[in-house]
Image (cartoon, rainbow, N blue to C red; front, side, top):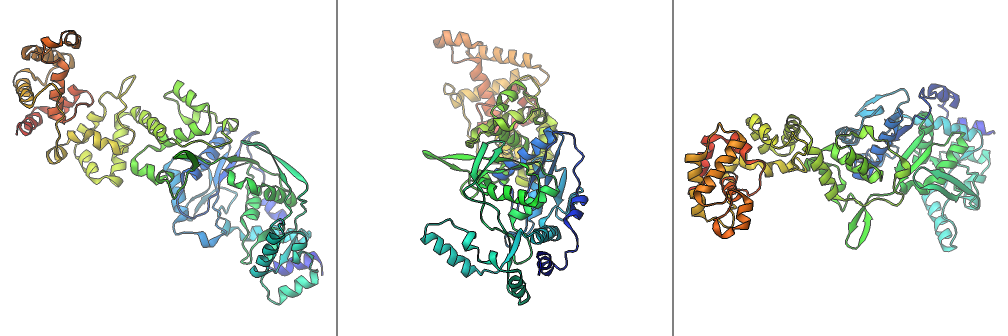
Length: 551
């Protein structure tokens, strides 16, 4: 009985050699320095902020270097798989404009020459490499039951020894080939373990792209590489896949740092070149006087669906993520307000090794700034698309009053310093509701008159304005001059400076007159440019609103 005989007994249907796959998946034809990165989630639900952060940066570093970003689905743990899990992941990435160069692009859809990109469809590949390790005497079958493994663990805990399957605790490691063969033929259940060459007393150093040089003991555990169902463990599958897909940079959360000894050893034993690793510290949140990791269970805003429902542009989320990724991005963006993310060169050296604090206010400010620079047509299109899913009432209104809505959205927009009224699409209804009669007529109206203007005085002002001073043909300058004339007639200062210097001489100022008119037609003290609002409303709607105000 030889190692090769045992390998053939375990994998009788594997008739290919590892050289077959090495030739099938040749080195990529990319220029020097091009990065091949990946996002490799399990199909267990939706993409959350932490995983989006990893995917975004993996994509960015590939794009910056004219490399390749691909998506691989790691579904070897079939029990955790959820219905539509793959579809949800791809949709979430697509919604955030993360372009997939290669890999899984939808349920049952792939592109690229290095697939399959779903691990459960690569079973034969993993078994070929496992068979190779068996032939080389670098792996072996393990027949230990869960009860035996638990007994080993309990003994190690009592004796305060290293926990795991190694050394004298690796009972199946020393079984003869004949004994292994006999037990397999008897139908005993088994897994395949790596015969670790590691010594825990030896140190291994890895230069992480974010954390710098990391030193750790060699792995000495005989880890499982093939489970009893014939599928690989995550550790083994990821090593084979990253090698054959020629991944050069792995961007992932730092919860995987502890697995580096295993991963480095697997690449070494298999004769593969180890990719570079970039371990991201978790995004933190302030919780009282302490900080903790952003949690998809505790924090609603950890789920990216939160941002879709709120109507925060995907671009704004990515801009924010870059501010917490690279410490120099914010200064770059402020000096380049119309700059695009593609123009900014991402640098791992400027990523915090201790984790960044999530700041919702900052994200909303970035979103507000981003929305302010959208054209009126682009903003209308985006609000239309968003409201179709999340606010049917708004969707119906802006569809019915398309031109009026676009005109309103354009008030003080196309200028050097545009208004920054909205941090999300959901805020537009709150800011524009008074422009729609269906809402204005039916919603409770709370007229916020100036403190120095009584209700009777306000009625007097609005009557005089509509009967004598309103002219739909006026330019904005002419309109404001008429406001001044009316102010003078009613005993209000035509200039704010005059009023401040002689407050006892006047009832108020032209600002109070303007605010009365603003309140009567919108109920609000603060709105975008009043002249533009009145132009959109028109005389008939204005007269109707005066009647409502006087009731």
